[in-house]
Image (cartoon, rainbow, N blue to C red; front, side, top):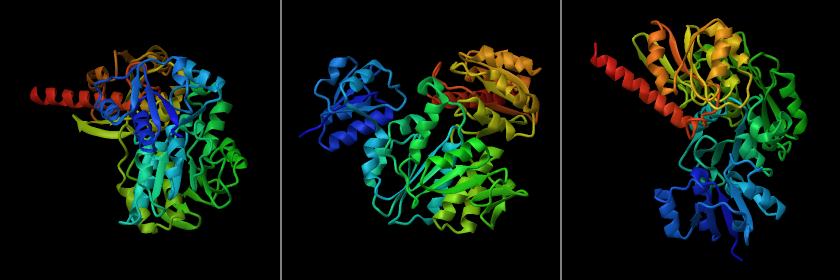
Length: 451
């Protein structure tokens, strides 16, 4: 019997889900009020037999066996509420693809650091890649799992970055190696409260057995307590040297158990948070029998990922960094901690009601001036003023570039690290970061010509 599936929300994950479902023989209807019918993906899928609509009324559920939703759409959306009333199963694209994860599955989650950690882990594992053993990277990092998982064989490895949204909709997740980088207060507008957020994150390990591994940040009692929610073998990692049972920092060096791996200051990207990310990569590498020398070489050469403390360029003595993926306060605190020289901080975005005064200690320690923008710009500016800093308000991130150069001095860092989501002004943090970087390059070209 042909399964009838409604895909709610298009974007990249919806497109991948629709393509996979159609290939499996399902009748697929995609619903998204923001659909662009001229989109090449829409036209290609339409030609293949997938149906599209910009309406999202409850009658779309008539005859539907399964709903696949975009991870970011809350379950309180009217059509999803109705689906629950009708007892129609609702999943996300990752859950749809899980049956194809026939090789080794490594899943990484956390409030901060998961993208960089995912890329570091993949870079380490690629040291053992062969024509028969492929390393795939997918998930919240930008490539839908269902786009790559069908290519897997039992000899391959899939490294996935998973958000709380994705994990909430993937209750049967069972990776061989799970990683929790940290847990802070994040996405509470979506989950409702911190407990619900943590419960979603715990889906990454809920189905693991003692034959599996949970690599867990050991530097706070709250995070240590997560170990009681799993049957997996715990591999702790600790920047504060609180455990030697896994990966840890001691006297400036990185270790795995009793083996020294490398000096922490040799890591190719700055900041204490990147020490934590490197500890995860070391733990995964050692569990996969990657030689120590190769792990260290990868971490020395690693230079970051797009939009996460990404070095853009240096001009007139200023170093410019794009940290657009810093969508919460903790991520910006971590970014600031990585710099010894004064920072011109560019911050602001979607107002989720976060207490921006939490940024004051980091601002006082690292920041020379703050340029704000976006919905919560006034709150960020108020925090900066309370920290005794000069502030300026502009329309958006690109508009902050010229004043940042004007307010800075040679030797300073210009840092876009918004401490807020992008959705008040941009479709995603990538667009925000790309427009910022383009504005930097435009500024440089203009001022080069004027020299």
